[in-house]
Amino acid sequence: MYVKKASRIANLTDARYFAAQGVHYLGFCLEEGSAHFIEPSAMRAIREWVEGPRIVGEFERASAAVVRESAAFFGLDAVEVGYWEALSELAGLEVLLRLSGLSRPEEVAFVWEQAQSYAAYLVVELSREGAWAATQDTGRAAAWRQLCAQVPLLLDAPLPARMMVGLLEAVQPAGFAVSGSAEERPGVKSFEEVDALFDALNT
Image 1 (cartoon, rainbow, N blue to C red):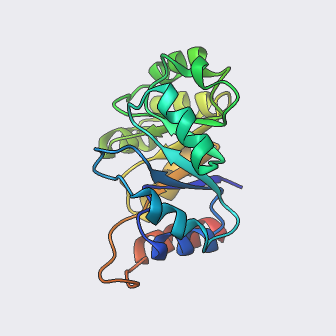
Image 2: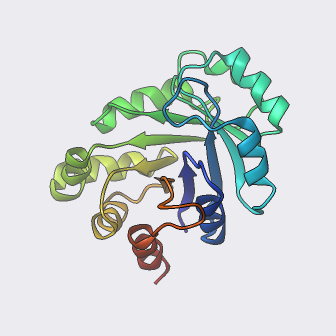
């Protein structure tokens, strides 16, 4: 069974949907200035309506001190950060490390060597091109699969459901991450594409 994370949650509709799908982590961006920032009062209101997932505070470049303070203040189950140089300052917290801009398994492996004492998972963002190469290039797929056998990766890629399932089957990561999105109107939105992903993985 894959570990599943829903990121950048900004409305109750998404939160309840992903909780019902059994995601393990539900992430809220708590870094002011970020395009995905959610007001803390809104995050608190949303989390009261969902049960099951671990609540993750998502930060991009906030200092370790700010992350620690937020984790304590909001009672977070885990935090996600976008840097690995100061992870030792987050020791004692459950940390997910998000990596973007890396396209080669050896680059990810290098970061894991530095981060493995402090990070529970690496959330690796792949571009559409990088994800396609990982499924279509035999050598690249084998390299990713070997890495995933050794490192707890959650893959995040902008792919339609069928291609995402193909990527997961090709490289066998620990899990995957998907993102929330805006509602069409309050309380209403379509989950057609992500439904297809979860349905395919549950069959």
